[in-house]
Image (cartoon, rainbow, N blue to C red; front, top):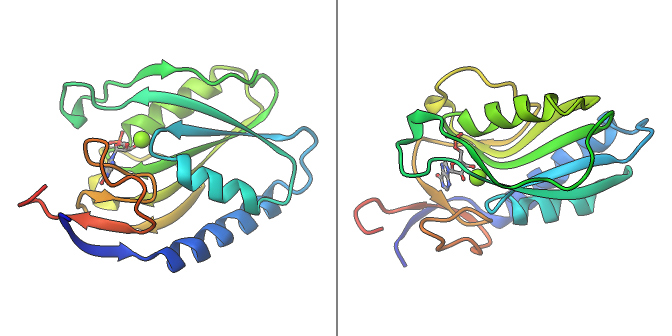
Length: 177
Ligand code: IMP
Ligand code: MG
């Protein structure tokens, strides 16, 4: 393995996901139509699956795939939709589920994109945030963990499609990856 060290073990993840779900369930407890939860593929698929199962209010799951960096560097902010969400979001409350907030370009793009669909509201939940990497302010409603500016893998996160299904979040060894 080329894993350097565990940053967040599976028990802490489970505990935090339960806390986030409790908070989200409380905030949306009076919702009239089910909350549309849009997981951003591929990185959020494990986080979303766990989070949804602890929610206590009505919700429907949806999925969307975007390419964040393409061939350019991450500072370019070049976001493309690879596969769009399927639910009609007009007049609905929408929650975006993302794996990581890094430069902020991906979520900034998605928030604006979803607001242009005449949604009733758009909120965001991210598993992890790298506070030192943000290129500009992005409003995030729920944050699992603040983490250092290192490349992390596991619990849905990959490096070149590897390590996604590790049950914990770990730092990759930059020397060996
Ligand atoms: P942003 O647009 O720079 O905020 O990029 C966010 C996206 O980059 C995330 O959705 C991830 O797919 C990817 N990403 C950023 N940092 C990491 C990391 O440490 N591990 C795995 N993926 C990451
Ligand atoms: Mg992603």
